[in-house]
Amino acid sequence: MTEARPATLHERILSDVRDNILGGTWPPGHRIPFETDMAADYGVSRMTVNKALTQLTREGYLERRRKGGTFVARPRGQSAVMTIANIGEEVRERGGAYSFTLLNRTIRAAGPDDLALLPGIEAGQRIIALDYVHHADSDPFCHERRIINLTSVPLAEEADFAEEPAGTWLLRQVPWSSAEHLIRAVVAPSAVARLLGIAPATPCLEITRRTEFEGRPITFACLTYPGSKHQLAARFSPQDGSANL
Figure 1: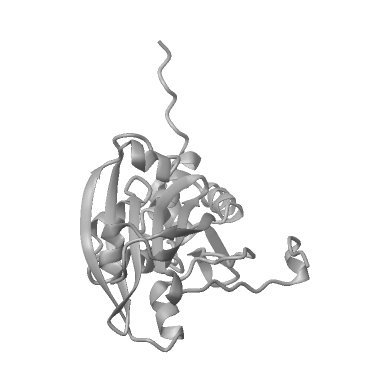
Figure 2 (figure 1 turned 90 degrees about the vertical axis):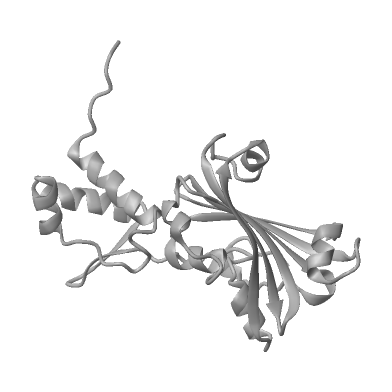
């Protein structure tokens, strides 16, 4: 049997930097070590480090500033119909006072239902499952059900999601490269209706979202809003390319 060849130092640098970024050790905007320091740490030439960082910059992990150093790239703006919104900002933009309640936080192995919600994770991988109710002026505004892939975001295990909502923490800590939204009208199940303070079968707006970074699944969220309390708006221009009159 042929043994796997050890990774080159170039590949090790790539892997270590990606892991630091995806794991949240280096958040967006973080200045990474100087090339000379990394070269000394890995026992390689500065040229080898430079080549690896240049590749990571092309992949979108890093941004390099002339005479300023190299930084973890901040999430890029998307020209999609929907952006990834912060629920707290949504409430405050409407003039409301925002608060939230963490109902449940569980760390467990991913099961079949989780694999369907967040393709790319494997059965048995550790995930965090969370349930929230978000409030506007103390009134229920949105129910959130979320799972986070701990393989991609190990730092999430130590985060205090009772102090900061997971969605806000992820936007601040973890870069993302693509997101998929599904928007549909639903009737509120009894359990969700009770949490939102509405009658069962009340029409609601449901937004499900899958987020990943360079093919690595990050999180799935299901947001349920009472239909009478939420609307979607989008602004686009002819330059977006996909706009139709």
